[in-house]
Length: 118
Image (cartoon, rainbow, N blue to C red):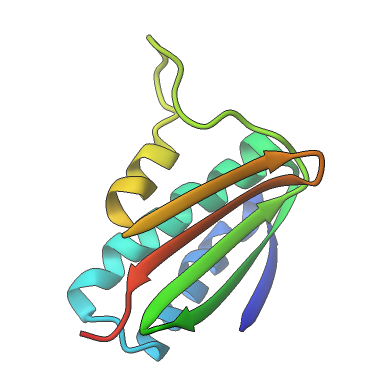
């Protein structure tokens, strides 16, 4: 399991880290772009809607790549009617095979799963 703490200016590092983890897990090359987009969307939400810093953990489980992004804030799951933007979780849900969001007194945690090796 690998961990990374980050802030808003660190998002390029988050994307690079996600790409490296996907390759290390054997994710098919054609899936890596979508994986990085989903991770970036959730990581951006964490440091813009949650708290000024967040953490990301990655690991493999049963051949899948699992990513957990946590921040100490509390944000709402999804865009409000008529809003512009706010589609990050929606995009991440479409790109991942599973996404869960837990919001509570301990902050917000998003866990996503993606198929690993082909």
